[in-house]
Length: 270
Length: 256
Ligand SMILES: Nc1ncnc2c1ncn2[C@@H]1O[C@H](COP(=O)(O)OP(=O)(O)OP(=O)(O)O)[C@@H](O)[C@H]1O
Ligand SMILES: [Mg+2]
Image (cartoon, rainbow over all chains, first blue to last red; front, side, top):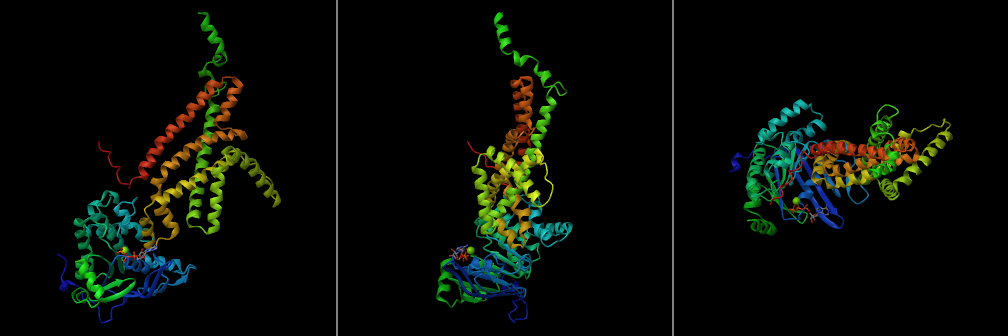
């Protein structure tokens, strides 16, 4: 159903494409719990980086550190070549030193959450235009026109004036993807976008994400859908216990894994 | 038939003049006085409730996001105000408050001011309302699904905008029942200002009753006015609540 390798856009392995996301030696502690132990990650323009790993291995934490939803303990984070300036917060973590900078960076990272997190008091259209109009300062008329296009694209043109609570999980997640696209993100961040969905609704959401990936969108994607990761990812990172245990192209990770743990993980997932 | 006259005699003070005449809008009827009292009461209630909301929002901001010192101050404020009887607070804030303001003005070389009963009433009741509103709104904000706040953060919304665009509208459905109660309490707490001689509805009623001795008529009339105010409020609150809940899932039918 979803693409084969031939349809995949060429991965810029030659190092020429610019780095959209660069994470270096990232550490994160929750109190005594050392969740990320020196993780590095790079996503070049057009790459789809899939992060896989067992529950509690730190996947969500890694993703959430990229836009500082979680304050890293130490490490370097660069988005579109711009390093996020960090300062110690006095409790052992680093927080963004410049609120304006982090807000500007966040506003161009389209994040999609496991539990959709649409704003419940806004219709789908209002959800999609909220950030363009009220954060990015785009004219309302223009934002509406773009939002209608995006909602149509995810198959929700008819639902523009409906509140999220009246929609299925799959519809809500597709709307959340439209909201992310509305900020014209240079990179999209997905945190298990289908894990909260009933099995029969997973397909419609994966199809939308798959189409975006094939279009050459840059993404960092945390997922438990191994088949999907294999189909759309250009690079796969296997996280174990807060460290990168193995990484590489999907053919290698899923076809010829080297690490014993990864082998076992792939077997256990099926 | 004699008996009827006895009863008439007993009720004489009440029936001396008919209720219609007593409540007539134009003098010698006292209707205009009562309506003026009602208007004053409503003004105070609206002002106090509005001030209470503003204090409440600022108070929640302080309690949830403020520095430890600010948090402690807010805690002291809400605890103190909610612990002391409102009547005591009104007397305290009204007399001590105006005195304090005037002394401060004197200190800095300004002329003392005569603080109007209306402003003082709004100020005093507003401070009381603010303490309760803080707790109502705090509870409502904690009831917002955290993901919605997180999404606003993830998209780079600055704190002030997040409060206006996301937090306040999202907490409203959870806050409306509590705030509606506060509004109804505000309308009735205005009666407490009678003790400082402010001409709100209860005070006007007492004066009318004292002058004409028709206490029963006037207090029933005042009661009816308070009731009408509440019924009218309920209609408005119902509308606001329906609007605030526009995005909430439809309430599941309780099946048989
Ligand atoms: N806010 C927090 N406070 C304390 N501990 C946390 C917090 N968030 C995550 N953790 C802990 O950090 C570890 C990694 O969590 P994380 O959510 O990143 O895992 P994950 O790989 O995304 O797992 P899953 O597949 O279950 O989503 C877990 O042990 C978790 O309990
Ligand atoms: Mg997770």
